[in-house]
Image (cartoon, rainbow, N blue to C red):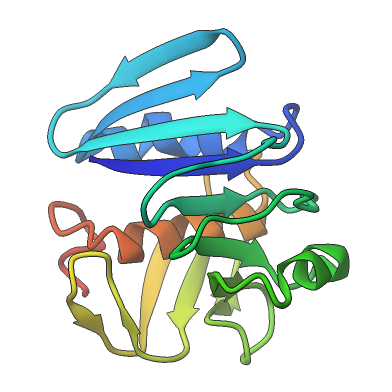
Length: 178
């Protein structure tokens, strides 16, 4: 099982939507927010814990998915992987020197994930350098055509795609490309 800690504004529901409507097609997702829990899908188990902030997290090799406006004010456990918005300067400052493995997502070619093409309903997400998925599989630079769900921010789509690549989402349309 993999645990994903989602951090940021509770009014930002992009990752909830993407987990429920896309990731649950290939995984068993348990989503926890405030005092509610939901489960969707079948397959490898993922737990997503969505809070505005965390007092502390004690977990081995956790995954953090930061919402666009999040400025983390807590320490990250050793071995943490953080998917972050490079456009949020305060977020980047908070991560500097944290010792975590940061995967930047944004609109620049220097980000780990960016995009090479954008239309009203789709984006081509670019992995700009080799990385190692959680499974140990090496993933070479590539481009992934992704539909943008109505009402979902482009950063959320890029960060969610980064999460899927890191999860080695092999039973999906992304798996066919990586």
